[in-house]
Image (tube, rainbow, N blue to C red; front, side, top):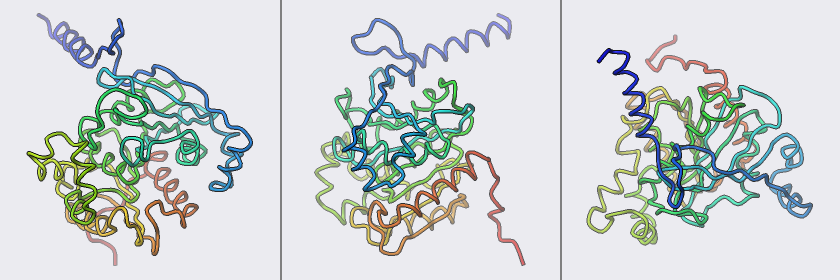
Length: 325
């Protein structure tokens, strides 16, 4: 067989390996294939409620198209959201990772506007997953197990969008979404920059500090009772900072008054990132709560600046070696 024929068979094999069969469907679907999209609409009361949190809501709605979407991931139909500018082409992209578990923390239509809207208004195509086992989707929310595939399968979805430049993808995650971001960064080199807010980075410490989390972990994480320590370590970036993709700079933000995720997790992870010479920036907000709600405008500016620098403009970071006068 000629080298050209061998290469062709290899490409066919890789394509077939990527194909998954949706349950109950008669056709093969590619991971990340967009299966449905429905425009979001809001009445005057909902817009007023949104404006109470985001004063620029009307400007965002005028500039951004919001859709509830479904897409293929590991043979399942997963729900999510998309926000994209109403005009423009060759737009950089962002994957947004929600926090919480199951219905707690799931994105509603209005929350999608609040979380995805400011990023999309800045000129990004933004997609987000509700993760498997949530919002009526099949599968099991494994809190950082196989559900990480639902994040990674948003990359081929972005590849398929004609107005998106998927060579420039950023990732933003909050709380549990921060953990999902760290896990994704061990498995892909496609993310140009990441932002993590109040991210879970040490689940062993989290369970010790908040014993009520044991019930959540036991219900969601496979083999928890027989392999607890290993399962929690596997989801805790503080134990494997060297596995994060070295070319992905990370903006780490945390509030000093966060009771849900110990602020020390951000400080300890920052030390690990520094020791492994991973490019990062730590911003610690005095008195900031879990959502950094007191600093919403400042946070939006930091997120936009980070994404613009490293995703939109692909700016190289300065040397991480000691230098200067």
